[in-house]
Structure formats: structure tokens, C-alpha cells
Amino acid sequence: MRIDRVEATSIFDTRGRATVETTLFAHTFSATASVPSGKSTGEYEACELRDPDGGVTRAVANVNGEIARALTGQRFESLDALDAFLVSLDGTPDKSRLGANALLSVSIAAMRLSALLEGVPLWGAIAKRAGTTPAAPRLYVNVMNGGAHASFKLPFQEYILVISGETPSAFSMAQEMFTKLGERLGRVPMGDEGGYAPTFDTLERPFELLAELVKEFPNTSIAIDAAASQLFHDDTYRLLGKSYTPEELARLYKSLAARFPIDSIEDPYDENAHTDFTRLTAMIGEKILIIGDDLTVTNPTRIKEAARNKEINSVLIKPNQIGTVGEALQAVREVSAARLKTIASHRSGETEDTFIADFAYGVGAYGLKAGGFAQKERLLKYNRLVAIGDEAGTV
Ligand code: PEP
Ligand code: MG
Figure 1 (cartoon, rainbow, N blue to C red):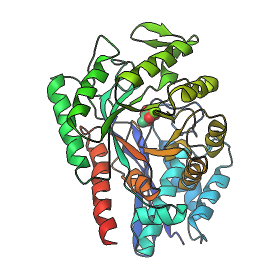
Figure 2 (figure 1 turned 60 degrees about the horizontal axis):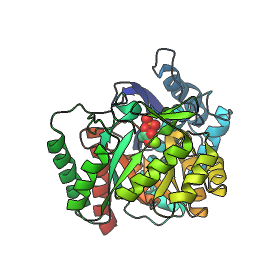
Figure 3 (figure 1 turned 180 degrees about the vertical axis):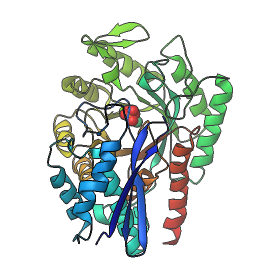
Figure 4 (figure 1 turned 45 degrees about the horizontal axis):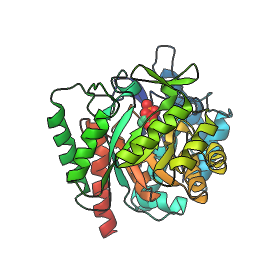
């Protein structure tokens, strides 16, 4: 592939913060990509380059300047070669010189452009590149926001309904469940990820409400993202004003998993609490998914390590945690090699880019976490999955 022109600009994400959007041109084709942005970011993520005032002027300038000069007119044997070139051009272990946001916008646009040039759907191109079998993911629909995404109104960051994605009715069922929950909650604020942000007196109440819904709809269950790095202070975890030791927290998770139809718990402990992860996975990992996010940060080396120590049995994959599509696909390969499950994920600050839906379908991910239905940027990802289902039937 030969890139003729590179153009980047700054756009706003769902929180009204600036993020990078890049367009690549080749022949008469062009492809655009924009990158999301996290709020409860992991300590070991690749560096999102921000100006002191929070803008992305330097990241955009890096794409329009150094990256554009290096790519324009260059012919790349493969997308892997292009991504490796971007990584070496940056030259830092955490992509802090040019910015993981700058690099990923180019990497996704290149993947999209290559699919266009080949005349194949993006999910098909991803599957071919990754050597995976495409399949519809389960839907992880965020319905209630807490933690850092809703000023800690609820202790855990995300309360999610898991819906089997293979059935054609999955989307209408998700929509119906989301609406029903809204009716039961009444007027409440909304959180960062397009879910409701209510307040309850007890830890159990959100689970009771979701369990009632799950009873009414077949093939559904409950997931949470505890995002526990955010709850960890002075060696204990603070939940609704009460402190929990790691052992007490394990007992709480075990009891919740016994009483409610729980599919998974993401980041149950702080990102550095490796032995606590291992103990919990040994305790309840046969029954539910224990998902690494801040723990593993889509980093192939960290995933391998966590798998070796049996810290988790599933991994969240967020391409912007690592900075190129090639490395995110390598992360998926590590997940599969360790026989763990892949859940592809959006970020809490999103754009209209639907790449993550094609990514999830293309790698045959177990699930896709794409937020709640109250934000267009999240809905677009679910709509893209529906369109992919149609394409997959005809291609
Ligand atoms: C998450 O923690 O899984 C998440 C999507 O939130 P953020 O993008 O803020 O990390
Ligand atoms: Mg998370």
C-alpha cells in the first residue's frame, strides 16, 4: 500500500474533550479514523499525548508533520510493516514522543484504507490479518454508570447487561431492557458511557434490579467493571463509605456471584494486586469471567504474564491502550494462545468511529463492550454490528 497524503485534525469526543482524527489518501480512495479516550486509565497504558491544557494540538501536529513526512509516498508491504514503522518512528516504549493517540489514528485509518483498496469489508480484512474466524460477539451493554464515570454515585464503575449477540433479537432485547430499567429508575442523571447514573443505599440494590430484568429475558446476565484501581486507597478498597481488605472483597464478590446471575467481574482489584487476582480467579474463575483491563492494558507482554500466573480468565482489548492495530491483534493472539476470552471495548470518551465493532466481529471476540444506549456514539457501534451481520450474510 502506498499512502499519498495524510491529514489530521482535532474533533470533540463524548465528554467534549479534544481527540485526534486522521484521514489517509491513496489513489482516489480515502479513509478516516478517530480515537477514543479513557478516564479511568490504567497506569501501564501507552501514552495519550495531551497538551498542558488538555488539547491534542501536539498529537495532531505530529501526524501532520513528522508522521506525514515519513509516510507520504512510502510503499508498505503489509499493514504490520506500516504499524511496526510507526512504532519505531516514535521510538519510546510507551509511545510518549509522538503519542499513542496520534499513532492509533493513523494505524486504524490505514487498516480501513487497505480494506477499501481490496474491496473487502473492514471486519473481513481484520479477520484475514489476524488469522481469526469472524463471529458475532455477545453484547456487553452498560446500563448503570458509577465510579469515575458518574462521580462515584455507585461504587462500581459499570453495571452491564450481557446479551447473547448471536440471536437476531439481541439488539431489540437490549433496547427493551434498557428502556424498562429507565422506567423503573425514573428521572436520574446519565453517566459518561450513556447509561443511567442513579444512587442507592446498598451495594446489592443495582444487582437486585438487574436480576429482576434478567429473569424476564432469556440468555441474559449481569456483568460489572469494578475498576478497582479507582477504589484502592491505603491498602483497602472503599465502597459506599466502608473499607474492604482484599480478602473481604473476595468474599463480597463470591457472595454476589452466588446470589445473582453474574457473568463477569472486570478489574476486581487494583492493577498492581497480582496475587489478589490469582486468588479470586482460583476461587470463582470456574463460575464467572474475571476480566483484566487496567491489569493487562492490551499489552501482549502483560497479558502473557497475567495468563501465566492465572490472574484472569478473560481480557479486555482496547486498541488505544497499546497504540496500533497490529499490537492490539498481537494482544488478541496472546489471549487465544492462553485459552482466555477476548472482550473488545470502547472507551468512556468516544467518537463516531465504529472500528471497535468491526474489530470485535473480525477477531471473533467473545464480547463487545460498547456502552449504553443514551449516546449516539455508542449506538453507532451496535448499529455497525447489525450492518456487519447483514454483510456477513451476503459477502
Ligand atoms: C473501562 O474501564 O473499561 C472503560 C471503558 O473506561 P475508561 O475508558 O474510562 O477506561
Ligand atoms: Mg475497565
